Image (cartoon, rainbow, N blue to C red):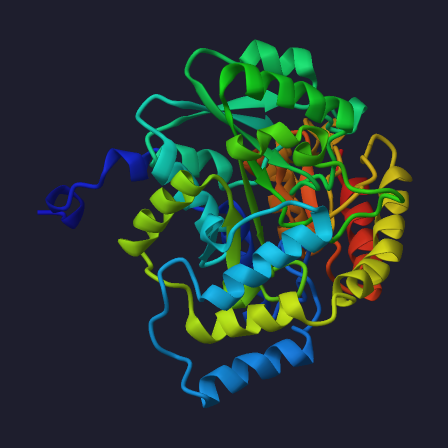
Length: 403
């Protein structure tokens, strides 16, 4: 008897796909290992080393024997440091008990929905969205409801579209600004509309701020808690050190929110991962309490890469690209090339386009379908200018070969 018939899988697992970004990255690495000259624009992590003082703090923690279990929501010092950063950076007051340290930002979001969703509860997900948002909701028994964003409006939220998608079953809304995949930032006007609806209808606002330090705006990054401070008891703020301090592999994220929800999330965490990695917590402590100039240094390096990427993409006939206001991604629209073909193989959608780029141009990207926006393909510019220039030359050549 086949093993598949002996071990029945849960329906909640069968309804969600694996992470497409990780799948593309794995395929690109396999091709590279086989000797192919692959330029990888698929991975979402800074191309910087973790700052030296942070690395040293992690090593010191190991040498000092700080390698045992900690409190489930994280060491007190780190929760205090997170609360201090929120106060210093935003003026928001959180007690350390309102902070949960988790195994990366993704884990924090997973904890939120496991703690607050019941079967059939709906969560509004502006699209394009980060690939894991809908599956996280589904795995908690909820229903993700896509709220389409318009490229022509810079992927800003449209209050009318948002209102049309909301129902009596709506329990929460995702906000990711700056966003992955488009690097877009929600305007104060849009956030005001979200705040009004959330207050009136009792929604939880899940604000994924993981890219907040990589913002190219001249002024302050708009945030819903600044637009409407009364929403603090209806908002969970998710952040971490992965993007801001190039600590993706250390797996430390954190959430701040209403005490009763954080306590429920701690209960979930206590029966899943328990505490995050002990030495990594001490490294994160050094990151949050030490010099804060590192994110600015990364941003300074990212800016010319972004400008070149966008300018070169927009020079291609039929291609449009919103200039990202944050993060380190470009999200060009290649739909004008759908319907064309190469060697008899049709390019019908973003998946076929990304496969074409990988197979023929040796350029790894992520299809927009993974983000709920099939007209687009995502590229990360967290790589060197030399790689970006070579990658764009290959992309242009590949597009020119379509007929």
